[in-house]
Length: 287
Image (cartoon, rainbow, N blue to C red; front, side, top):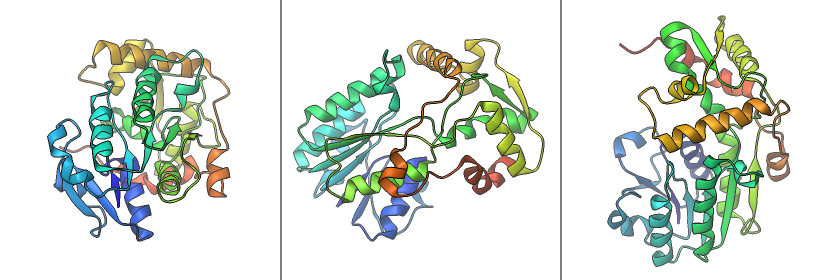
């Protein structure tokens, strides 16, 4: 039995579909069953919350492999999941981390991921660490200003990055969950095309069939507010500002060939992602 956490998120949805299509025995840990209505019907749903450890025993019972995705800046969700996995006798963990844990110096955001990796590694359960760079789905963060005023805010200027499609992460995760030979490894995952934000917006503009203005973020605070309009804790805001400064400075773009080596094909392109999601960006702002 494979247990997926984060099943209703961008990666989890793709992974659920991937494993369901392969006929894998599958269980989804969900906080709100209503959010899982668009997922395949065959996988078992168990209601639980990594933030409420006492809800996890039934979800982890009989589980052989765990896909672990935890968000935020703390480690308590990871600790709860690893504890439940140890009690249940889980034999394999595939943990979503970040490519930035391998950078020197390590950015603040990556230090939280690094600590979560340490917790998973210390459990003694064989683990695979998936370390993506930026996600193509981060472009969905552009929707508020795009729908409200027709522009995208650019916080990184000449900086380049190689975003990866969550569907590619899901395919790699499915391999690591169902095949031997991946335990004890860390896979840095990126797309193979490095873009500036302005170049990404140009590709999206072609997909939706209209011009989209790009405005440069003038201050780090403005860039952080773009991601978190209601504000963010200082530690998170500082980490985001640091990460954006590092992205601005990288005018080449960190890339790996890991997806091609593991899947035997090149990563999906950002143009393909934009074509598949064009209607989301064309949709008018909700009233």
